[in-house]
Amino acid sequence: MFRTLVNAWKVKDIRTKILYTLLLVLIYRIGCYIPTPGVDASQMSKSLENLVAVNGFMNLFTGGAFSYYSLFAMGISPYITGSIIIQLLTIAIPALEKLSKQEDGRQKIERITRYVGVGLALVQSVSIIVALNGSSDVVYNIYGEGVAMFFTFATIGLFITAGTALLMWMGERITELGIGNGISMLIFASIVSQVFPTVNNIIDLVFRRGTIGWWVIPIIVVLVLVITMCIVLVDKAERRIPIVYAKRVVGRKQYGGQSTHLPLKANANGVMPLIFAMTILNVPAMIAEFCRDDSWFVKFYNGVLAEGRPVYYVLYALMIVGFAYFYSTISFNPVEISKNLQQNGGTIPGRRPGKDTGDYLKKVVSRLTLFGALFLMAIAIVPAILMQCFGISSLLSAFGPTSILIMISVAIETSNKLESMMLMRHYKGFLG
Image 1 (cartoon, rainbow, N blue to C red):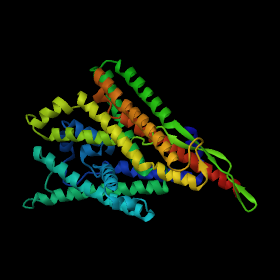
Image 2: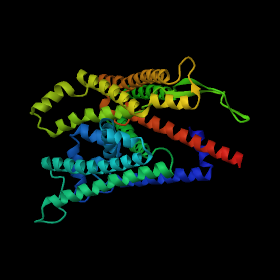
Image 3: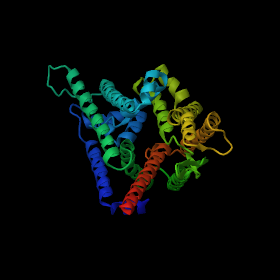
Image 4: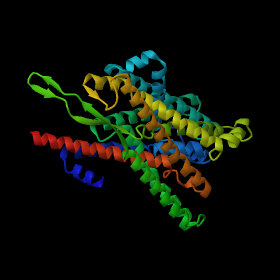
């Protein structure tokens, strides 16, 4: 990967794309420290210290901006949530499903997703600040005495919503003019920014304060290395379906007759099922932290749904499997692929063209989806149980399985993108 980055840096146009991406990431990190008018940042940070689930989850995807409720406090999460909602509606509403299969229709759905993301950012930002201000004074009236606090809350909501809209624009610009997927790069930058504070926290607790034994460090290193190795192996693994194209004679020329393969990744869904499952499971934790300690919901959550309880891990596993099959359904259409193969004279050895080929591809993809879901379950649940047993789960906000999976997946995706760009440039120079 480092050799690929060095070679890509030597190419002027690729170097320009890399610098453009780094510039937007730098702007994103600067925006994480721009204060929001009307919010007392120090009081906000103190108020969120007791809200472990809310603060930890939101800071992971906002690079610490949520702790101070700065410009990018909501991060890109509302856009991701909006895309989930639109994709679910696409399956449920035939008109949206028909629209998604058209070229201009996909652009309209993308525009709708952006509008939904902006709306969710406005609702979430105002709801969170109103709820926190009810327990402690984290907001001061920026319009002076005698003016309703409504305008202050509206200003805060619009300010943070504008930050989310700016992040959506930056993500699209990175995808179009930079390197890799823009949304993934912003999430990657957010998680990486939390790695160094986590390392410093571990060093402080082990060597300076001595509250935790030195044996924690070897356990963390081994756990991270094992998770990294497993993620890289599965990410590179693929099932190759052999395809043979029949010979065709058109005029005096002969076409076809070659053999190739259809590559199917072992974990084609990536980290998205894990993120969706984790997002949904964090909702009860967030609600419980805003409720009174003696309320029935808090008692029910602590006794049944809290992390570390068997029900939590069972729901986690079921949601990962469900979202894995959901994403596989909307991203891979075996019937359409079998039709394309049949129209181009391609066949799978031992399978008849048409329905038999589609059924075979559907069975293979179903098995690969199950394998990918089981892999994500193992990556998410087994290390979490081990960290609970060793009592170090609170230390690894940036070294958690989901964080490592996102960082490695984005790094591999970016490396592959750079390699493909250099390969295209090489062919262009050769032919030119």
